[in-house]
Length: 120
Image (tube, rainbow, N blue to C red; front, side, top):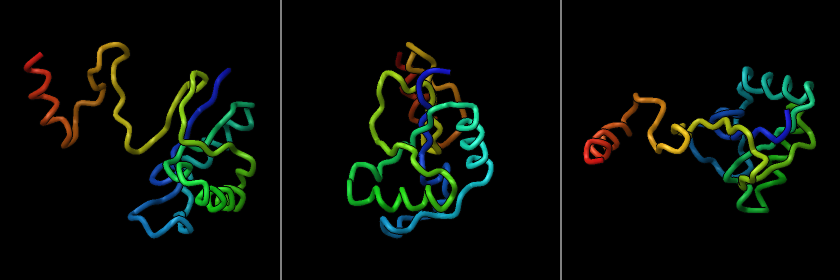
């Protein structure tokens, strides 16, 4: 598989309940940690896609967490590029390509979207 898979840190790869500062990163979420390890064993490029990367001083905390959890050397970024093939994130809402319509149709955010799409 060419390209890279982005994996969000807080709430996707690591448990998150509220912001406690840049040095605090929650315990690993085992199913996601194993998924990332499996991709790596298959030769897939994986990058940690986190808002923390927008502040360079926060990156060493992420690097230490990754090292502690057996994921040393992964790139840490907050920037998409044309090689990104997937993004795993607890805050994403997937849309139908070229349509702008959400694939998932449940959640509190849908009330406003229903009103919007009725107008279209």
